[in-house]
Image 1: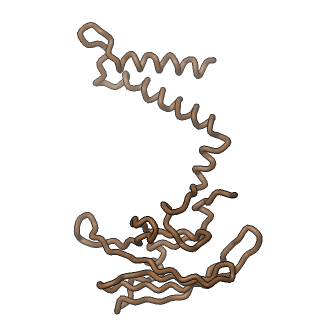
Image 2: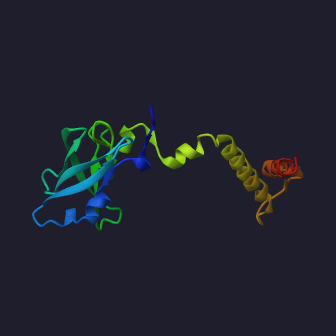
Image 3: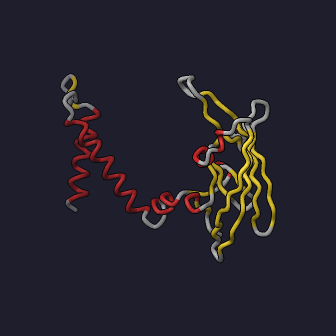
Length: 186
């Protein structure tokens, strides 16, 4: 079974809907039809998506109707308006029906659109980083950590000795420099 990769999946975000002027309706309702090409591993199927966005005060929702594998699927998502940080504006969020968390992007999985937290998957960069190059990345991260530790004693406010004894930070920096020499000159 192939893992679900978010980068390759079809997704709908609230930012995309804003770009398509869904939030600029006068009476709180906006309906539109999007014709999107759905790419499968075997063939390409053309699908039609009907998206209805209702932003009225009582019960705002996002309705998505589409055809997938010759099955018509209709999903309704609750959306919520939350005030922004400086209280000058607000931001819309989709409430995931299965997890109850707020999200701004939905991904098309086997059963329909779901949030990222509801799908077990990863991004492409995660599969590369932790796939067959895992040992390389481990060594690279160790090298970066050792460099950072070794450079701590070169800062102007560092204190190598306290009351005649070597500080713990200085001991770690000396040890890191020694390991770096071994790492670069095997």
